[in-house]
Length: 374
Image 1 (spheres, rainbow, N blue to C red):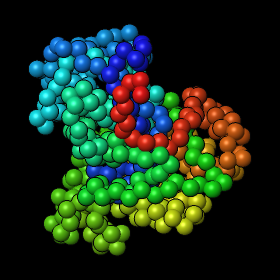
Image 2: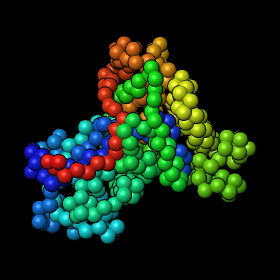
Image 3: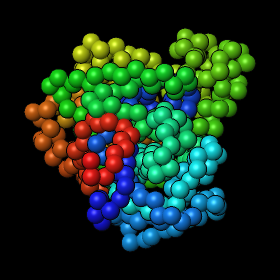
Image 4: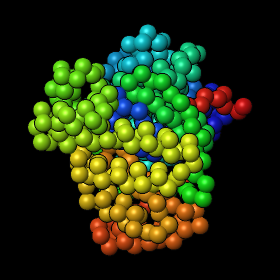
């Protein structure tokens, strides 16, 4: 593969969510950041009615007919790209036959949103060869619809962070209105450490969609009494007043959403005040809520987070992403990071038999489109 053989280079980021898990589809505010782990697409027009795709990590090659992208949604490789083509066509964008080379450094199944990075970069590449400009915010919405068409009823956070992230900043994204504030990520003497439990997961095979259905059921019950349009609008006080209207399991789900929204508000204040210790405490609380009330962690993620929390240099750790596997993030004193990794690796392996993997990543820009050779 020679980059100079292509016309455009398009990248989109994986993401890490500092706090605000499983509340994006409930209209909550979240705090994601784009990562330097990304999906890169090299693309050139080929003068045909086919999109030919190659991957750096696969021997497979796939050709998608631009006239019938929906017929490719069930293929093993290329289904994300086909879904993006289909959604762009619904937007009235002219699809140009092209050759794509895709290279993803976001670990698959890690909870760092490889799917969003693939969707956003593919849409960006298709727009580039068609010489069509679509704002990153709209690309994120199209990418979200593409994921929905593949069976994952996700919120907007992953695609929005992948498309719209900014270097060295976290986003305070209101998932109800899409208002977005960028906050400098200044951690002082602490570092953000990402660890993968190495238990593969796939959201369409997990209980992710079940959790979303449970929150929708709760909104149907509570919305009539509280006159709210999303669960994130319910305050902790209002929840306590109405909690008995809900079945026990549904009550736990809503308690997580309401309290996680409050933790996001407290985290913003802590970050703005430079109070990273409080931010770490909120990460710990978030993990417990995801474990006990939302029940999306599992044995491996719990073992990894609790191993991290027990290290003296760590001030907070929690799972990130959809759950049921994937990654944790931890706030760790920078001088203790290497000892932290060794300690957590040993303790985690003793608990689960898995070997954790740690990722080095910076907070980076989201979608980028450049002409090759420039």
